Length: 418
Ligand SMILES: Cc1cc2nc3c(=O)[nH]c(=O)nc-3n(C[C@H](O)[C@H](O)[C@H](O)COP(=O)(O)OP(=O)(O)OC[C@H]3O[C@@H](n4cnc5c(N)ncnc54)[C@H](O)[C@@H]3O)c2cc1C
Image (tube, rainbow, N blue to C red; front, side):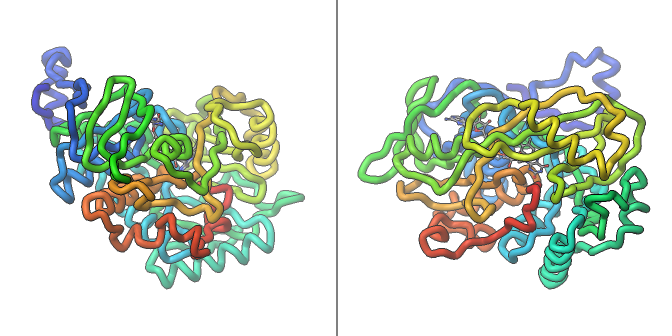
């Protein structure tokens, strides 16, 4: 592979002059080597970020990322890209805020425009219970040093003129507002990390499903894949909705459920919404993409499944719920809908942990809200894999918390859950 070309205004002009014939491939796609120091299963954002920080922070570069489909084709490419860090518990606020702050400089770090847009995220309080919950989170965030604010209905309308704040069933009573929250371009996050990993000499191998994990004396020695056996010193499982399946292949069980979560977009319209709004009571959230589509997220299926697709029920439920707060939706045509399989833990917090198999580490349980966590999670996971011990960011998120009853309850802050 040709060395990576630095993306710059100068490179763009040069390539425009020569018909764009000089761009090298963004990442390599080699056949697997016999052995790697670390194999990461899953080329979603979390797996790629894990590999990237293994190389960047810990100089571990003999790494392969194995992906059963195409890079970023899991939840990373299917989510609604909300980024915020106003969670309730200290451990969550720390990892999500680390992540949000890494997003601010990610484009420069990766030399790849991930289109981070800190346009502000508001979580509407539409019942008194919800208002109290968000005020409580706001107080916690002040102590944690996370910049959020509880704002009035009038401030909500000022920030978002298309909202009806005086709906008959669910009037807007206030909102939890994080001005430095926002969105990023989901594919670009995966592509940017992949390109940077490739530049460090790592292998990103697509169409390569891990079908079993090989162990000797309780320690991992390699994996079987659709492209043959590959040996490894350590193995990081980072497969989101398929965590239970892959963990079983490694010989242990996880306290996790997999369900489909759905989203849809409207036809493109003129700019009318320059913040992200989450309406958790009615169960919907909305932002406007650069193309003009309203990106609308709904709920998760009520039963466990692996069907990565949308359903009519969710379009109807989500749109019906949002129409009272956003009356303009009733005039829009919906364009597309889809689903992704999310991995839910009982306390709605992630798992970054060693496992019963020596040398195998698991990163999962980000559920419906892990896109925002990609840089922070990759940072913390790399630390765990490199040192065989969690650092401060991951210390509370071990599997043992379920046995010991030390839950990190984020069911309120996760809300509709992004
Ligand atoms: C509709 C929807 C909306 C969402 N909205 C938001 C949001 O607004 N904000 C937010 O923060 N989060 C959101 N999320 C959640 C977020 O998308 C996920 O938490 C995050 O993307 C998980 O990233 P990941 O890298 O862990 O998983 P993924 O991107 O799913 O990557 C895992 C990869 O592992 C691969 N894999 C699985 N099994 C194997 C195997 N055996 N061998 C090899 N590879 C394997 C898969 O093919 C997949 O590519 C949303 C999710 C959905 C579905």
